[in-house]
Image 1: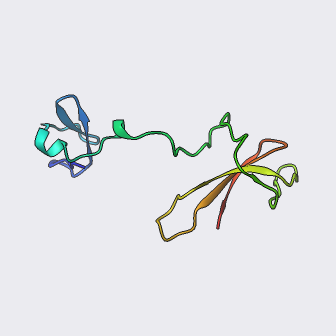
Image 2 (image 1 turned 60 degrees about the vertical axis):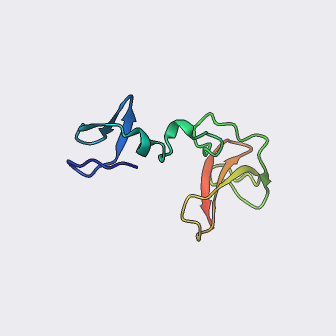
Length: 107
């Protein structure tokens, strides 16, 4: 990461420059230093949490030890995601198999 010398905010790459996300200050990219950075272009969406209304939970593991607060159904699909630091338990995201209600459970 590179931080702005003017305001201290994080900068992002834009062509041959680094641009401040807050104040708009620009600096020329140092190619030697830039090779050390990981950009968001290199990241994949493999581990994106499916929280959108139309996200496809079907085919995910099924939990039958839960109860939907909306309809009372006892089965839901779920995904697990580490949302906190590594020493905290993961979060389970559920989608009711009957009404489609979504909720999360912190362990």
